Image 1 (tube, rainbow, N blue to C red):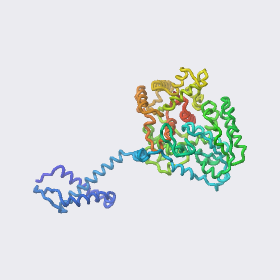
Image 2: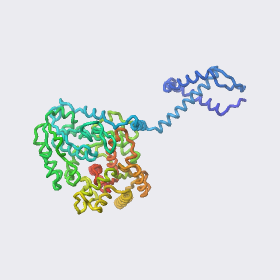
Image 3: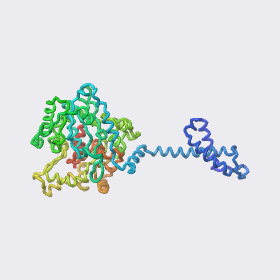
Image 4: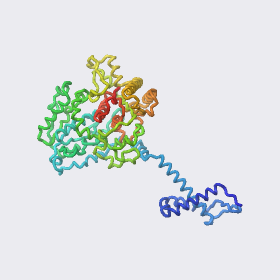
Length: 555
């Protein structure tokens, strides 16, 4: 009786499985795996010349190239190659995220030694359908335009965004097409600017950051307001506009008067624009901005909330597809579940393949602010570092207040300016008070988090359990490591992550602040920095969503 080894049994059984696959699948099987035939032919064309020894029934070792003897071994070899490659493919697909290749490619320093220039986004904006003089009224050659050429530059996205919203609202209330520009660090010159010793894009197209009526989506049915247009189209449509000096419309005496609400300043502009018959109106480049930081940095701006909160400028505001997909790619950091993406198209969900260029270029409001739900269990902290070390001392020296939209009356946390007047010099006690609320230490942040958690427990009992912490920050990794350890001392969080943990594509990195703002919007509980415009914009969206005031807090 011939003894059969376990290896021979495996080989014969494997060959039988392979034969059955071929018999069942026929030519389709071979077509699906043509590489097997190539590998098979290459290897066997060489091995038959020096054929391995074949063990016969008499246990003689023979060297042979007889096809009748080679065939079973050849079939077994094919199957083993097939099984190996199939197993490898299975495990690769199981463990592989298609975004890993994209992110690795985008992060390749050798491939992207410079910041992105967003050429595709610029071209997309130039080709918006409203850029057509043949369109019927209220668009086309009969449209009315408003171009704020002196909009803020060289400022963070928080400051630029709050001005952008009011400029767009002014255009809307005067039935003029809002003329939009880039998020601009430098108006002219090279494509790159320098900030903190690093190159950044000098001009980022707004469609990379936001979508909605501000950058050209249509207003609702029956709304006669023309769609927003790009400044390049405006310059072609309006070669000889009426140019206004903003100082001649609203004097500095009015702009800097703390007793004058922002709504009055706004109405002065509405009256002026409505009095002009020229369809093309432009603000003089070197005149003061229409709505300055002094207005947003005080409670005067709250007088605009009833109009802003009801307008499509804010209600139909949406983050861009690039921001939304960046959020989706990092959903695991926030504990976002499938339900968190129910309002989004499939290509902007975590399990999807990367969106196409066509899907990334879209001015329609994909996820309006009114549909953004909080993520259960998510606590978000906004902790500014870096330039705020000096900035917060400057705020103390001049007795500055919180940003206006951080001072809604219904919000539980308040800030009271010290009685002493700053006038450029504050006492050390006042400086330390400002630093605790503006540039707190690790210990102060941890203690504040404990206080908020205790107050929430009194308010909600055990019904609101926070499980994850996300830190919106520009802090360095070493400092964040200390903060993470301190926060873990409060309770056993499921995770403590930060902006430094985000995986962002090459084009998403320069707009990371927008991604952070979206995370803050979606926090179940948000603890912000009252002196930050980034926080105030986040608070504004949370108020628009009518989230419980007790869930929006401050350091």
